[in-house]
Image 1 (cartoon, protein in one colour):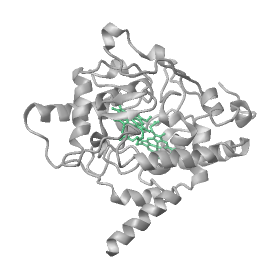
Image 2 (cartoon, rainbow, N blue to C red):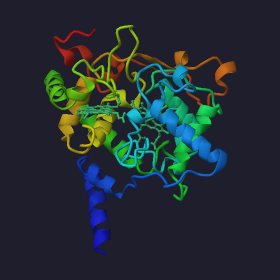
Image 3 (cartoon, helix red, strand yellow):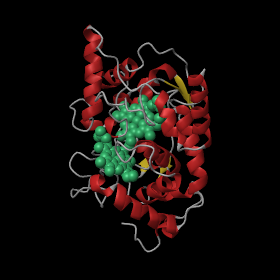
Image 4 (tube, rainbow, N blue to C red):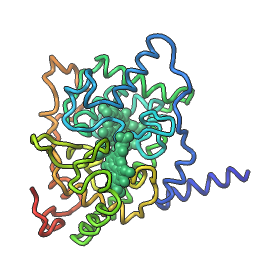
Length: 322
Ligand code: HEC
Ligand code: HEC
């Protein structure tokens, strides 16, 4: 009884305040199954795991990636060292139980393979891999393994784990309201906080340091380093929800709401690649069927700010756009 009351109040807290999101995470399983499955399925789980950890350099996926990220850059490794088992927003535990699931973005029922492949065009700033290629099947096999023994509950609203749905949607709504009120002062506060709490790992120029991944900009050869403007992370509301739940590394849940909002206002005002869906899809003979009813979609830093009623030039003030 005591435990139930406690859980109930934790869940209620999570609904009222995003600071509760971290407490809510206490209910979320944080480890992969102890043993790999036998035979070919086990081999595919291991291959999927390797791809998640080395996406931009793995021979099966590197040609589809247009930045220096890996899936585990955002689907963080948990205490078991496996990608996607950390309890913050974007855990993969429970994800497979939701699929096939409805997606508003594609206006269609998406398979787990569709969902993973779409991340290549956006978060990975690349192209959509071929559906049913070995890499695509391996990633779905790995993610499915993380939901071993969990009951199926197909998601009719969003292509999202039951562990993520409420936190992701609640966070997006909550931070959306805050971001609509943002001014140049919030941008400057975001920069100050970024320099104090994030730059030690991600670099003052956002280019990343060593194995710490980049957040914006290009490398010396002119290649984009991080996610593009079609990625969830690039949206002022969703980016803030993810960061509050997961960063600074190992200290998820410590940023106040306004801090997370201002930091991502600053980060997402820096240069990120434009997104044009048409240019991200390979020719049909190569990519195969694209399971979506939406074939046109474009975003830029400017349009991502406009989506919250903000003008990027006013927000940045005298900080020139490069
Ligand atoms: C720049 C950050 C980023 C990178 C890199 C990234 N993702 Fe994601 N991904 C997200 C976010 C944010 C969500 C939405 C959060 C959520 O649904 O919990 C998401 C959601 C997902 C989901 C749905 C999970 C769920 O339960 O909601 C899958 C599956 C997924 N990503 C697969 C991948 C794969 C595979 C890769 C590598 C090819 C990848 N992602 C790379 C940020 C990223
Ligand atoms: C102690 C080092 C450290 C600090 C401090 C830190 N991060 Fe991270 N961050 C990481 C690592 C490491 C990853 C990727 C996880 C992995 O590769 O296993 C990451 C991933 C990210 C990502 C998704 C991947 C990408 O490159 O786009 C974002 C966004 C991010 N961090 C933002 C922040 C923000 C904002 C702060 C400050 C509030 C911050 N981080 C503080 C180490 C750090």
